[in-house]
Length: 271
Image 1 (cartoon, rainbow, N blue to C red):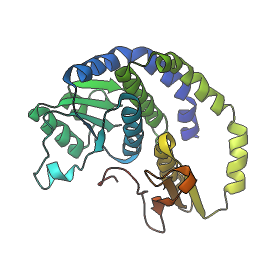
Image 2: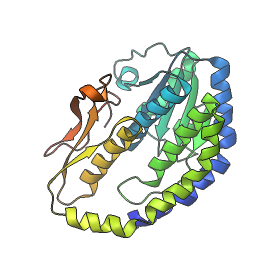
Image 3: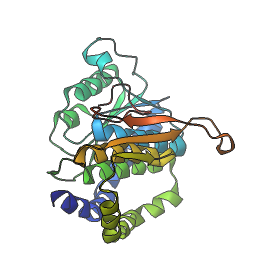
Image 4: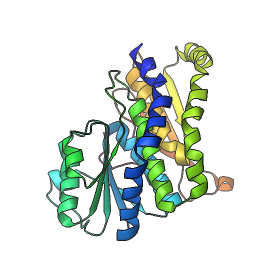
């Protein structure tokens, strides 16, 4: 099965990123420290938009850099882009072809913002529009569901946040990531057994909080896109600012019937 083949490529892919992309990540981190933008904005679509949620968490928690998620229609439909001149704008895309993402990055660079792209396709309009490029290098994904390109984006975002924070302890732990992923893949038989047991369900709830919320959104989307018949799914997140002792849960990502994508604490225009 194509998707399983691509899933199994992840340990080698992530190990390659750790070696290959360190110089580019550190160049971008140095530029960020020199420019000291008051905030960053991430623009993405689909699976990359879920990765953007993770990027928001790691950049804010590790590097203390406030992160907003862009609304591309302000650039492409309303012609009313916000002032990005002192910011950093980061675009995430597997193909690098989305015209609305290119429009946001192009406008940001025109205004003088620091721009960067995390892309799987090096030769792409989005990469050409960015000042800095971080390359996933995941190759072509033939399966409908994104797998290796998603985890590649997560790793690059983590590397950037750690480099920007200059956290030597976390940086020393990064080389263990590919081995950790490989250890999960060794559970393939157990996971297949669970999937068989759950095959008849028609509704699913995916729970995620904090760093895991992005992957809860992605799992919800993948469950819907990969199941036959389409699986209703929901992803829930803990309400922001409420302690565990007073835990309240609000809907973070829900799909019913014909809804094709999860909704959550993401870009207001995520698809």
